[in-house]
Amino acid sequence: MSRLPVIVGFGGISPAGRSAMHYGYRRLIFDQLSRAEQLQTLQNLAVLTGLLRHEGHHWVHGDGHVVEVSTFLAGHQQQLLNHTLIRKLENNLFDPARLPMHAPLTLESMPGDTPLRFALSARKLPAVLPAGWQVLHNDGKVCHVQVNGTLDVMVKDSFASPVNTAGQLPSGFAPESLYPARSHPRGLQMTLYAASDALFSLGLDWELIQSKVAPDQISVYAGSSLNQLDYDGYGGLLKARLLGKKITSKQLPLGFGEMPADFINAYMLGSVGNTGTNLGACASFHYNLNQAINDIRRGTHRVAIVGASEAPITPDIIEAFANMGALADDHGLLQLDAHLGRTSADHQRACRPFGNNIGFTLAESAQFFVLFDDELAMELGATLHGAVNDVFINADGYKKSIAGPGIGNYLTMAKAAAATQAVLGAQSLQQRTFVQAHGTGTPQNRTTESAIFSDVARHFGISNWPVTAMKSYLGHSIACAGGDQLAMTLGVWKHGVIPGILTTQQLADDVRKDHLDFLLQHREVDPLLLDAALLNSKGFGGNNATASILSPTVTTRMLAKKHGAAAIKQWQQRNEAVQAKTAAYEQRTLREQIAPLYRYDHDVKDGSKDLRFSDGKLHLRGYAQAVDLDLQNPYKDMV
Image (cartoon, rainbow, N blue to C red; front, side, top):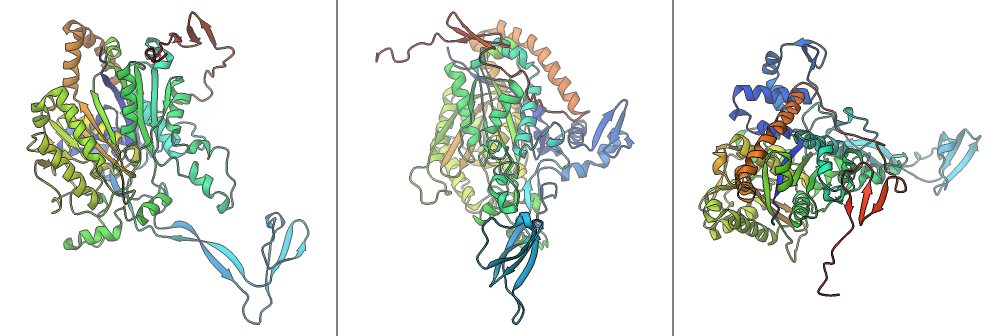
């Protein structure tokens, strides 16, 4: 019997804030919310960033002063909004006006002077003396050196970044302060927080879930496309010695691209199931989502945690993308807005998908989703946020430029539309779906992606396909871009508003518009009449992927047909307790900063003591169910 991969929990941290309970999504449509919802969203942000906390019977400002919460939120509303989403680079990560560098210089003595002489610590004397060096004195503490000729040196210097905008996590949010970070790279700090947010949102204890499934029926797929490139990861590994420092024991292992999945297994879940990451540049989240749904549909796994964490806002990565001409820099933004007479770049409107634009905006984000097979979701009363119909992945074929787009995305979009139509019918595809564009904000993307959408829409008889693009708010989080799309799509089905591309005031002349409806303003919709969304992703190297996501209403209808009305009623009764626990978690997020799950050196298993074989099964201490070793031969017709 078919198994539907159902989304039962999600969480994360992005430039919009916390993802669970749709708070990040609410930030995108803030002006569409009721005043009560606005204040709740502001309160969640204020607590998340340490600006506000609840102590005893009082609300306290970050500086310790007692405040009245509604008055405080009203007074700090603009501050909280301005320090989210895409904005000017802040100094909490580095100073973009003074990026460190070394300037190579050649020193020589002035004409008529004696040769260059200097003193240095004896322990700093190079093991191999450079050409022309002569040690005049060495008492074991201080060396006197004479240089005959010239001396090449590297002098500390700095330069200003031409790119000064990014999608940064909300100002004040510091994941490393919430648990013993122990020199973890930022991407792994974000992983622990985001995955914890997803697990807390479930309304189900992890121990209960583990008791219902075999330990090898849980899979975790998560990673980082760019690996961990800050100083605590590969960034430090590659330049420590050049900075006169030592490489640490952690920089290499913690830099691996699959380390987000490893951290979840080792320090959160204690999982022994399937694990890893499938990297596909900007389509990496979709690649991992595909792994997860294949596990569930085959029946080999009943639970899958899928996500990505990317922390690419470092001087090196920004400079690399800028030198490719890929990023929106200050000079280009000023040129775009020359007709407005601006004297400074409009950083909040740096990313303008499908409008006149100059490049994408880099962002940091971590998003995680918990998937169950439909039977487990029904049994546990899990909340149904939607379901994953299918994910399609195709390469571009032969390419001239490795970064240039090709034909692969035509295949993924067409197959995702066909799969949606196969499940829901032609009328539903034509009238009750919308598209989450990759929408990077580059000239090349706006022409190629709009052409793909237009051609696919025409083929399937779609006359006015709604298209939006989340990167206009959040920026491009590379591996996590698809996770950003999915989190915001789930919010549409909860609140009934498709966020518009507000940074784009007018479509560019070279954008294909036939059969398409680019949403440049928020669009109110009836969630019950919006059956599915197509999430599109295009990555460097020809990595294309498109996901077909089904609404909660469609998901519930499908489960009712499979399991029957009586089973649905029982699920609804169980879900009441689940919803209550989720609501309790939400109340915590409105009152206190939430520490992530982090179980370092917790219940470590020993192979000789903690497992045993019996009756064709492998039993592990601490797991209610055993691993079945009675495997069937899949090649019966060949042996």
